[in-house]
Image (cartoon, rainbow, N blue to C red; front, side):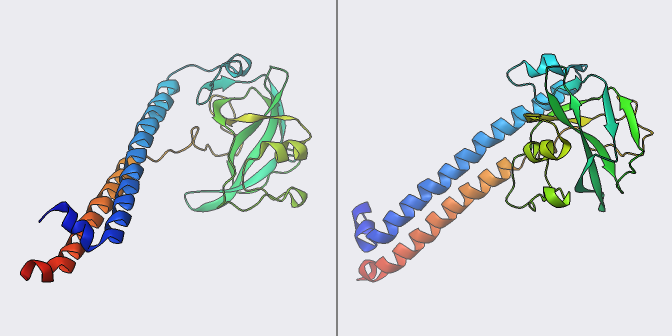
Length: 235
């Protein structure tokens, strides 16, 4: 049986199947590219963990300072005026306390102090030298509830909205996740959060899924075409 005979038996089905086969394999290849990118990113995060903190002003002058440990100039924090973003740790609901601190480069930066179960009283004022990890600013997520600045109700770290609420023109590109111990705030009633964003790496699994779907579909289409041709073959 020639290939042309298969095509004559179900031309529309075979053309559609060929397009789908190419698209599914393309998605698999794309996931393999994402796998390589994610592995490099995770390796870079691990590499920078061993590096000592550098002044934020120097790091922010670099092209890509993310994931680096940074130290800011002395910052005065007033937990009574801090913004509290909804969060949870180990299933326990609470808040991430966020304040604005100077970077030493003529700008201010959003600083995530850590997790707290309750909002702190207005008299919780202290000065400290922030040490932590630079993180790229949060990107809006379609799954996250919308911030309500008027009600002081926060779900994502929006540097633009939070800057207006705090009365600072915050840098829009990065924020700092505080290392409580290095900043000598491990007794401030705050709980340490992850210094780096948790990164899942399931791209190989996704790639294999797309490749499997492509070949399973090809097998199903082959069987369907053979069934259509069965009367001609048996004749």
